[in-house]
Length: 101
Image 1: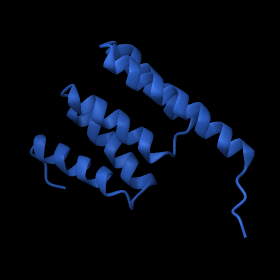
Image 2 (image 1 turned 180 degrees about the horizontal axis):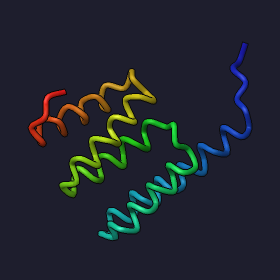
Image 3 (image 1 turned 90 degrees about the vertical axis):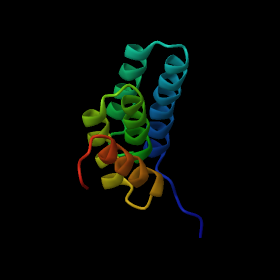
């Protein structure tokens, strides 16, 4: 039996993807403050999506904002605990700030 997906879930995912894609594009263009704002909008739309938290965390870590990145990676692992990459990013960030997990 096929899994029935709620239409609102599909719309939320599409909207958050739009902002996430925009953030990646703005980051590529060097518009870092606007990119961060787009990540924030994506998370406002879909705050329980681990991938969005992970992407924002990676963005912050790349800019040396490690404590903020760590919070994002913790959110990512809370929402999607089976995603190895999120745990890896969290571990690397903890190592970088010399803090045990």
